Picture 1 (tube, rainbow, N blue to C red):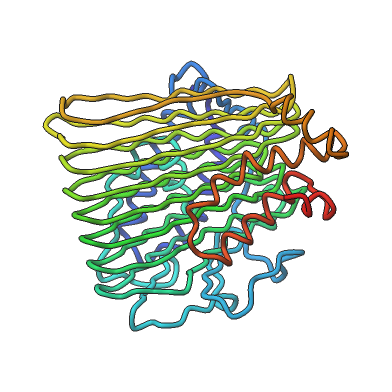
Picture 2 (picture 1 turned 90 degrees about the vertical axis):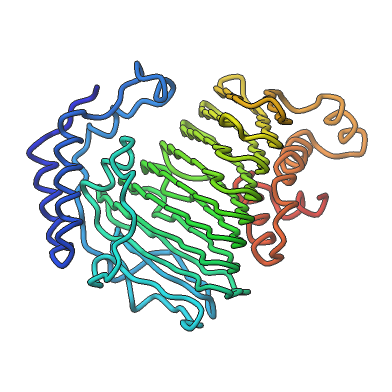
Length: 426
């Protein structure tokens, strides 16, 4: 294991706990997490789940908890949108705007004395959660009330502007019975800043609830982003999750979905685009705990320069969980001979009346397609960019919200450095 600087982490944990004085149960949990973190340290590459991702660079700098900034640099928030904003790990009420409070309620850990504490049962189960809990700076409990349908997306912004700062947030998103909502998590940072961001997102979908959950990771290219997303689905509930990884020097996300009652369904879609020396690691786990639950998982990656991506996807079908339909696919496009992808789709099936498929592909651009475009007078670089975008665009097809789809399309075009003239060919 990788040892941590004990005196520094105890100092930072003391600062974090000072914000939770009104929540003694949380302070106790934070102290327990700190002791576990210091005793265990960070996992090294000899730990199977961290075989391809080295966390040792995180220990070379002493990241510190810093206050919110008065300015958001070059980051512009959308006008006339439902927004909740966190800056450097702290909630910013002055920048937040959330309407329709009859159907939506939210509480902020650092500002509210909660009548009902959120479920922190699993916060010490993995290293990301332990680190996050020990140094927790803030968090959100967002509830969509029973029988409510929220048509306008709710945007949660996480903006890091502090050099060598760190933020640690824990969110709980709860959809009560028969409710529907679209929630968009944005993770942004100044391009040159080096900082650490950890985020835990707990999703609870009760009976017949429907959630579309987007996570758009555009951290600084020098940042470290560690995340855990845990979703629990009850009877006939539906989760559509879309994850986009564009930023950070190193990013790791542990994403688990538990289908706990009959009729539950999840769709996980992801796109990661890496360049320079980026390292993006996605670990997913879909757990079919009961019969008559279904899942679809589709991740794509575009890996360029000397960057590296990791995909480890696991689907578990428990004993007696019959009538399961589960599909998993991971497709990767290597644009450089120095780029690398480690992909490992997995199935664990303990029932016999199921339909499960999985697969992974790694390839390069089609030379025949490049030649065809060249015969139409299109130069090689333009042809390369157009074909690459065509590979990425599939992931957008199931996004029903037009404005979100168009915004993500423009973001992908920017990541692929497509010029305006090239976009005209699409």
